[in-house]
Length: 163
Image (tube, rainbow, N blue to C red; front, side, top):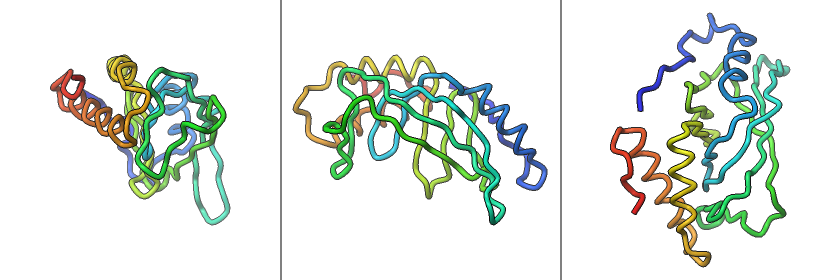
């Protein structure tokens, strides 16, 4: 899956409002597979910019789970299955630290740890894969299978991990 990275300008040259407009154009109202110590299907909304004290420039977004058979999956210690549905929360990332986004992917810096995959092929593949997960699956197994699937999709070897 070939991607054009949209966030290439140096931090000093980057216009935060232009970055916000690009991110909104790519992701506002869109469906994604959200990954952070687990995986689930979500919709992104209300993408906004906030210039905080101390020079932080943050882009935030509201995330809402799209209930999906077999999801969410999680790593041990991060199980969200017993929380009220759909899950809703806010994410954010400091765009001065270098936002990582392209047409089909948006992620925080590594120290924050979330990623979202907007590719229709990845979403469809993860939904299909998760629909086959047993209800009593051991924590971590589904997450591992989803991450293998996504990795193979990004590397150009589709369907690996979908067994």
